Length: 208
Ligand SMILES: CC(C)(COP(=O)(O)OP(=O)(O)OC[C@H]1O[C@@H](n2cnc3c(N)ncnc32)[C@H](O)[C@@H]1OP(=O)(O)O)[C@@H](O)C(=O)NCCC(=O)NCCS
Image (cartoon, rainbow, N blue to C red; front, side, top):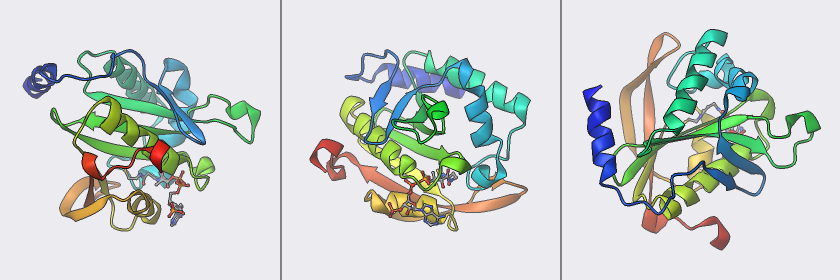
C-alpha cells in the first residue's frame, strides 16, 4: 500500500504530454484500446491458456481469476496519475468478422518511475504468428517515448521463449543480462533475460 502511494506521489511530479483520457492507438495491423468489462471472453483466452502463460510471470488463471484481473485492469486504467497502461490488442482486419474489436492479446506498460517503464505483451494462442505482437509493441513504444516522454523501456523475457526473444531483437532492444530466478511460474523459478530500449535509440514507426 505504502509503495503504491509512494509511486503515485512520484508520478504526480511527471509532466506528461498525454491528456490522460482513454488511450486508443493505431498500428499497421492492430489497434490498441482500453479494456472494458465486456472483454472477459478475450481475457480468458489469453490468461486462461497454459500455452500463453507458460512464458509469463504468473500461472494460468481460472475464470474467476480472469474476471478479477479484468476488474483490476479497468480500475487501474482510471487512476490518475496513471501508472499502468494495460491495453487490449484488437486486429484491424480480422480474418473472422466475429473477431472485430475482440481483445486477442495485450500490452502492459507499467511505469516504474518518472522516466522508465516495463513492458509485457501476449497474444492468444489462436492468433499468434500473424505479426500482431510485433505491431502492438512497436505502437506502444511510439506512445511510450513520444506521448509519455519515457526515457527507458524494459522487457524481461524467458531464455527459452523463442517468439518473445525474436520480437525484442527484431525491434532493436539491447540485451542487458540475465535476471536469475526472476519469476516463479508454473511451479518453478525461471530466469529472465532483460532487454531495454532507450528513447534516443527508438525510431518512431512513421520514420521506419
Ligand atoms: C511472444 C508472443 C507475444 C508473440 O506473438 P505473435 O503475435 O505471434 O508475434 P509476431 O507474429 O509479431 O512475431 C514476433 C516474432 O516472433 C517470431 N515467432 C513467432 N512465433 C514463433 C515461434 N513459435 N518460434 C520462434 N519464433 C517465433 C516471429 O517470426 C517474429 O519474429 P520476426 O519479427 O523476426 O519475424 C506470443 O508468442 C505470446 O503471447 N507468447 C506468450 C507470452 C510471452 O511470451 N510474452 C513475451 C514475454 S513478456
